[in-house]
Length: 98
Image (cartoon, rainbow, N blue to C red; front, side, top):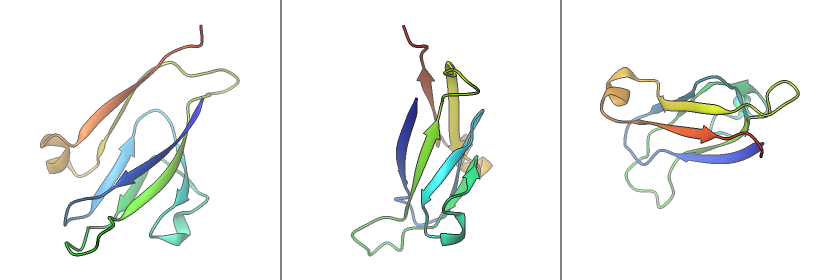
């Protein structure tokens, strides 16, 4: 299973998106040197407060594992501790194929 994610930053401060247990392929990033790289953390710049679009990254999540699908709960969050403690975190549940 692969999924393409768009992660936007709608705040006027930078955030560091992080996911546990897997790496993602960076498809689009304001930092062009990141494109094509495998990461588990990526910085998303602050929104300037004026633009009608928000800074974003596009990521390809690969839940296939080594030869078979990975099942389980994957936690993602902002890697800035104060932001994580403030609720910037979530999880995704990946189920095995029936």
